[in-house]
Image (tube, rainbow, N blue to C red; front, side, top):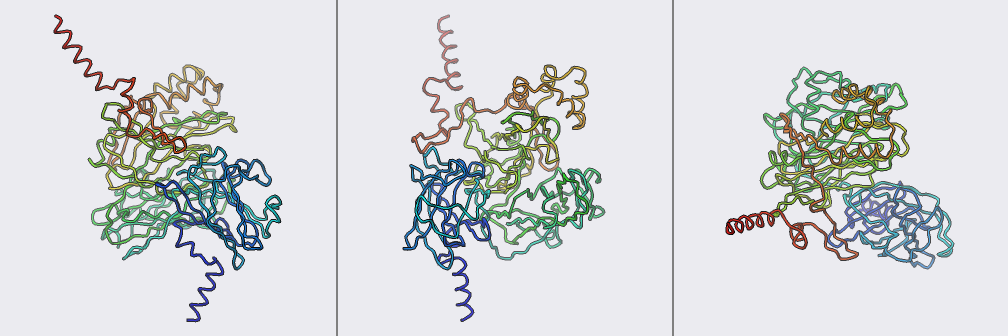
Length: 617
């Protein structure tokens, strides 16, 4: 009994009187001495925070547009000598004490100071309608935090922080909550003593297989955890785990540069993706009742681990043993999950000009692909990982569906992150599950900034090149595992005729055909990147027809997508709680009733015209 009392006292001393882990759904250690807890309510449009900080002085917390102080929406609070809580909403206009905001939109719930810790609990609306405030959305929030060991003498005499920092979090996607299932076990797929090559970029492939106990009976993965070696963590950019059947036991243990492996191993990299991790990612826990099926009789058993090593300083002697741990249960879940990758080219077809703050690359999943592979009731998308490299600053997964009146309606985006952080690439649970039906179209838009660059950026595997990908988790599992698209060749030819020296045309087109960066890059760097040239290149990705393709694990379907989905017919407009405007979703046809004519109305008018013409003969 004394031991239990001592343990309870230690927990109380470390975290104060509140059991904040029980009261709040999510938590993150912003530093060893500063812990953040939070919960949100999408229906009410509110979010609640608690900060637990090892100090008896003032505590600061806020949201920043970029991780820096200027432009941040912050609070500063403390418990004074009388036990009263001092708390104010402030707006930072520079790197000095933020003045009190005229609109107080952070609301104190409680505060206490005990055993050397200060706990403040407070709430805020997700949208405050204050022009100075940042809306809290399902994207990457830059949380800033600070504290000092002593209380201020007054509201206007708050001395500078002693400790401060910035952390990227997805506040509405949250962080993984603990989930424990009966009959659970785990297995880990790791590299083994890989000496990272002293080159800028390496894709390393290791062949393994799922354990015998999983091969013999289907299991259900509900937690995926990165296992990153501490000594090599700075060099591990991403990990992808492919599951395939094309291999045999003779390949087991094969470990080498991916492009040097056997063709069957390279082919496996186009198979089903069961897990992925990228810089800054943490554990991913599937929602209750959902898990990823793996193993069982006659199922895919071989695994290829793809490691992307980033070694720009060409360091030697770095050894890596990283991988991914899978936690599974033998109990069948209510929903069996699958993965769907959506992306653009990773070769010189993806061209981003230098010196532009915002350039867009689009990739599509065509209606032909969803019509062919999705069940009649559709799929439920519940999680996602967005991925670009260093130039990327935002991504959006748009969703289109044919409205009853025959027009193409843009629905609410499946996922949207316009504050993307390359160093925080976390699989997130979407705030709400999204239904994708057969015949729907998806569009992935990736936004890049190259104002600091003097040369073109191409699609490619290097961290200095670019990618545009979304990795969706959904249920029920189908055979569809990849969707992508590529602008048609005519679009590049038209651009080259106007802006590339004619003597280089054949070399450029051949380099695009075979994906040769070494030829394409110097040719494209001869272009005079005027605003006119940038706009012409941008039209390739926004307006030109694209060839679409999708994979069902055993082959590809190719389609020509001449009708690029866009928002011109029925654009999505989100509800505006500040003005009371209801938004556009589900109102496409009704909105066309005034001053516009739908396709069905045109058909009716045409029939009436024919009948009237016949009657007059």
